[in-house]
Image: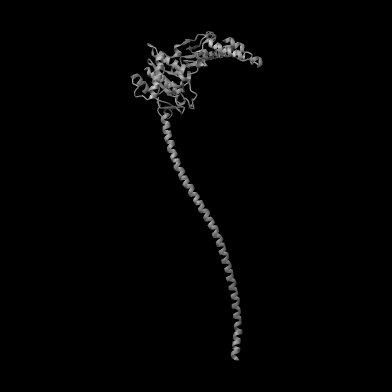
Length: 435
């Protein structure tokens, strides 16, 4: 009993202890639950973060790959750029060699004009011709010599002076060679040949380089010293010819299709009116003995005499070229007065029926400190002026009249059906009367 009571008491006494342990267990369970929830949340957050991190890692990896690819591309581009720079450098070197006047020492040959036409030496051809041995020349070179030789035999006469020979070749070129249309762009039919003697003599077409190299070949074949000159901008070329002890500029290209001899045997002062070149490299042209303008000029006297001359020139029946030499102290003032007079004369000519027969030109030709040459000309179409020999050909007066009669038969009543507009050329009846 006592034992039982004791046990009961013990039990009773232990209840509070047991009760406290239960509460603690609950608390512990709650804590554990909270911790578990926290772990789950943390795990979830961790998993989410891991996904985001994986995503970020993927994005970073992609970025790294992109940067790597870009770097590789840049490396490739740099390599290509370096290769291009090398190519550009090589181009500049080659370009500089050809464009020597602009990028290095001036040379006569191996210079490219207009970025397309190259001045090539003709000495090999002329040397073979003068030696009488063409066997070492190519077929094309031999053909060139044959064509040039045929021209020489046709126009050069025994006993001619060097000046007369030069003028004969100039006249032949002026009459037989025309400007090629491919001045800046090669024309398929002639463009590959218009800058060298073979092409010029074959096609009778030339750019400035073709005129210059062909004229030089002729001079060299005639044993006359001649050079090809180019301007400082590498856009044009012409010749320097040595006659006696002096050099003279000749520009066949500039005279082609226009008034003859304007650019024939010019001094430096005359040439400088329309050309610019390396005067340190090319020999000076100061002599006037064979200057065409100086040889064929007349001394200026009075304004009245000048105006009278112009009236006779434009009403004459042949082509006339004349240069007036002015040496007075007021030569610039006189030149301006001549310009006014010539301009008024040109207006009279263009407003009359004379304009159908030819055209009047004028202007200062050359000037230095001591002398001024003022030139005038009236070029008749029938004499190879604007229309040229190719237009007129060898037609006779009778053949020309036959052609005019046919037109009159078909178009005689043209203005009866169509309103006539008066102009510088007059009416149809006036035109027929001119012929």
